[in-house]
Length: 193
Ligand code: 5GP
Image (cartoon, rainbow, N blue to C red; front, side):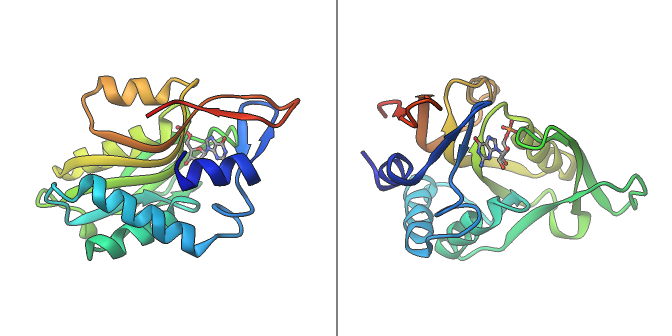
């Protein structure tokens, strides 16, 4: 069991509706030592690729992406969420439906910071149905850049996102894949990797 799986088993809280809360160490209060370990692990997994930019989505992807960007020594770019329909023409835009909040967000990246020369590693905290990732992939495509790989801290393997993204041919690496979880007992079961 890797250190992220061990931490999820110890401190993760299983909620109804297929939601896993990791607020005590990953996306509210953050364990910086764990973040740094995650950054190093993604670097080991993707260091063979010509990555020159890390892309994530606000808010909870930013801390993990920061740790990854530090290992690669490249900029971290995050897509901003906006409810505004007045979108200026100097941004790439995608619609993303939030799994946890059940609402739609427009996400934006300034054209200034993403171009056809970029080789991007996309990072996020969770993968559920894959909407957030498809939005980020669309933004890189709009810029004419290349998605070199995708790194996810926690994939919920019983939801469809992982299969959709892998079927599209992307190199997707998840540090922990939850096979099932039980809100009654609080137990989390992981896929062997
Ligand atoms: P997707 O777009 O793949 O359906 O959902 C991914 C996004 O929803 C992630 O960016 C993450 O913020 C949020 N998310 C999805 N499932 C969970 C979950 O079980 N727990 C938490 N904390 N966030 C989740």
